[in-house]
Image (cartoon, rainbow, N blue to C red; front, side):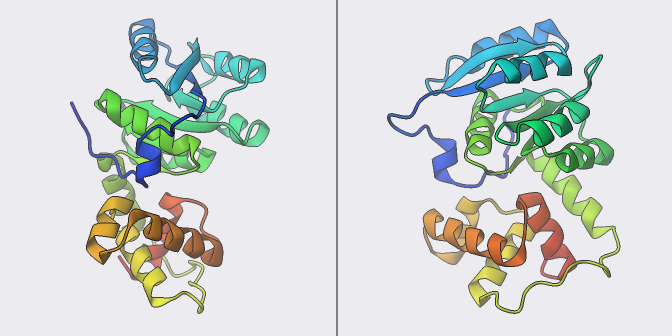
Length: 232
């Protein structure tokens, strides 16, 4: 089945001409999932699956042998699970992006994975093209959340107290605040561009400026800040 992930921009959803393939590690403890997934992803012209791992130790070994750009990470694995592996990658190999691909979409799993440093979170009903787009986006430094995951994240953040949230800086432009509002509503860059009648490149520029001014780490953090500021 096909999902509608909240992806960030067109450059992340299409391969760049003349660029080298992205080096990807696929991690899943079930060979019946891991091996077909690696084979299918390898059909993308800009993806090279360099290793398939059954647990977190296998991931760390593959990354150490590198180079690796993106790890497609299952959460529930023996020996060393996906959360701890993601945390160790964030600490020891910050240049390696993690995209979670899991059957679990509960609040604890989502928040733990994003808190550990995952750049994307998809459920296993994601289609091949959704996964490929998420890998490309993560390699480009962008965050991609499955629609179900984004909806749960929004609900979780809205349910939490926001009194101690960091205020937004006073020098945000009206357009930057507008963009933050739309991010808080769960809109991807393409939808934001259509709503504001501007190009996706312009939206990306506003987002880069917004993130720098407000010290926002990534898109999930932007959602939290928008809700805390009463913009979403």
